[in-house]
Every structure is written in C-alpha cells, then in structure tokens.
Image: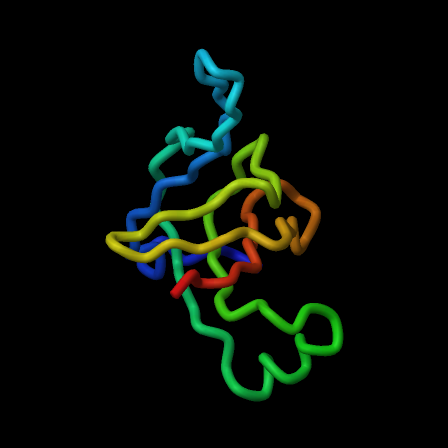
Length: 107
C-alpha cells in the first residue's frame, strides 16, 4: 500500500509522558512534545468498530503517519483541541513506510 500525500491533511503533535517530582516528593505526569507531523485521521466506521470490539472495545480512530521510530502506546496525539490516546502502533506492511496508530479520542 502506498500512502497518498494528499490524505495527510491534519497536523498532529506526538507527545510522550514525563514523570516529574516536586520538592515534597509528589510525582506528577506531564507531557512533552516529541514531534509535529502530517497525518490522516479516520473515525472507525460502525462495522469496523464492532469488528475491532472483539480485540479492543475502546478504539475509535485510526491515525496514519509516515514511519517514525520511537512511537509507543504510552504516547498520545494532539490535533487542535482534540486529544487521542494511542492504544497500538502498527507497521501494517512491515516495510517501515507508514504507521497506523489505533487510538481513543478523549472526551
């Protein structure tokens, strides 16, 4: 499968969690930007959603980006005011050209 550049119309920011500890020893999680890339964001259709429910009941969106090393499910995606938690990272054809991020949109 070849990624069509015209479909990468969303600018997203990938963020990684960072644990910080204050002077009292309280640990809190903050997010730091790791990259800003172009992406295709698709809501999973009703049929796909129910088929995916067998594996992961929460996945609501598929985000496609050019391959980029270091993306893991602990990360999240920001697109405008929307936030998506990454549930899985797939290199669908195994050729390191494209990644599919299976995500849940936070409400």
